[in-house]
Length: 402
Image 1: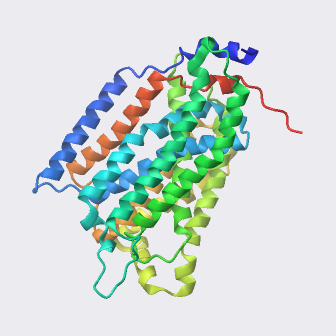
Image 2: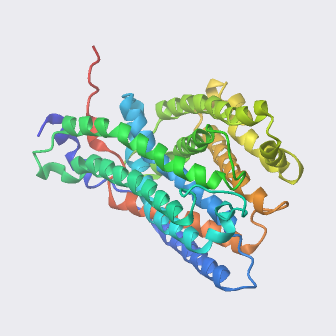
Image 3: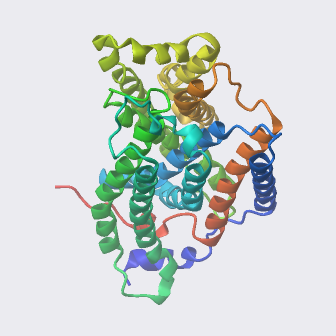
């Protein structure tokens, strides 16, 4: 065992976070959400909005998947400042795995005819064999299995040195680091493939024959944007509440703020790029649904999305003191996540309802809150079972570049 290993061996098995009563409260909220979902699905008089559940599913799946993707990106560029985020980000990705698999099966079973309306074309319209409900389930499960399979392998490799402690002298930390570096491009590719499948299928809610090939990039980059912003809030709050010290400091917040400045500009670029084909091609059958998003009943939601994802962060991140303030960046991160949730909402809801109001009844609220609570509860449980930081990576000195 080398010096770096012995320096952190004592910390590896004693640095798990203790959730206390928070986990119990979240489990109660999750149970209430499950009961509400069952009641809304079995009671004909209940008015449970299934489309809203799909929006929340897409949002949470995308944001949680970014945890391991963020680690892969920052490992590839050798970003030393990002190391405190690794373990918590990776665990947040695996926490959504059961929700992702159960959720897509429930959508397939209960929302196939009403939700995927484009699978039932008019008699004179011809559909490719690719566009049927069985292929939809297959490619969705394939995308999820590909991404989460690679992610599980990635996370387990990173966990082994910390779980081994001082008992295993055969683990070479530098070799594990190189293995994670080699796996990182595969994890990113799996994320893109999985989200591209979902963007094609769920974007068709807006327009059955979508001509913009940029839309998948806009879809998965929006997830990357929101997931990276979420890392500002979640790890920092847990780190500050831990009794054994926190590795999150001004350096991490400042660098993450600079990354978010870049992501803000890229998000606006991809948002505008998806309009190029239909705008300059003069395709009124596609521009009309987009105008319906921007004006009328859905106008306030659209401009709230634009404010949260671009106007507010772009202006705020110009000032250096904002990127040094944990509370300011947390507030901006909340706005970004709200904006990306509204982006998913505007992809789906306007097609089914000309005047929908989100969370307009108690069933929608309890199910949505329960869904989020269940995901957070699993994250806290994982954090309580495993070391919160990747201590072996924090102890490794950076490799000199020649």
